[in-house]
Image (cartoon, rainbow over all chains, first blue to last red; front, side):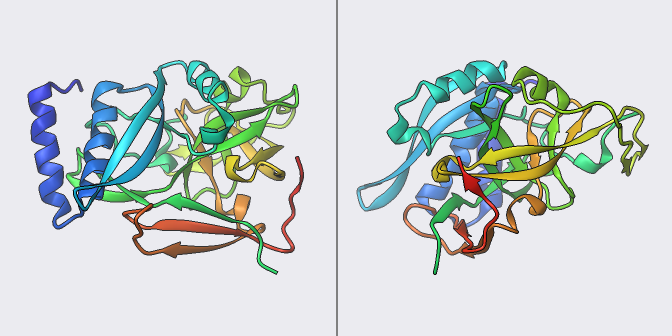
Length: 110
Length: 156
């Protein structure tokens, strides 16, 4: 399922409503996670998260290191990153929005 | 004596097709390949899996060897698997604790999973585990792994 930017905005509002009373940092992370899945569906993404205090609020600063459908390309970007930050790099598969519900035990082997 | 501590963010993911949130524990581990190098791979904790699981396509792409002599046909909710899985030992490491590596049994699955599965079996023998409440660095809380004194790792 492809999602338009209008649908993405709607999805963010819907998720934030469902989330209830959350901090600015949690809200930032929620939106940035949705953004990864919106902008790079079906790709591997590597990123660095850092939380800073801005105007007395904790805010997320996410730095994208790499994104690619080929896992090898993203692995190379991680391994080429300066060692000081490398251990903190997250590596995930960005599931397309609307296709996240999974039950790995119902694997369609047949 | 207490060992080194690793902290991982605990996060809630929005499952848009269900309009609900679910906690997910995603983690990057490094798996040792045939050439001795460690390759970063994406993992997701699956407490229902008995063993670490790596898709066969990902193992082949990363030169992670496994024997195909004896195939297993796991029973799934959808019925008995039609294609064989294989089980073999692998060595893995946490990037934050790169001086140690750990051996575990791994199922190499024919299923086209885009990520690997981490089983309790892989880390419970080596770490004490607890969860922490929210903190400035981990706004949704964290999972804390503390290396046990009697862990089964070996120097990397």
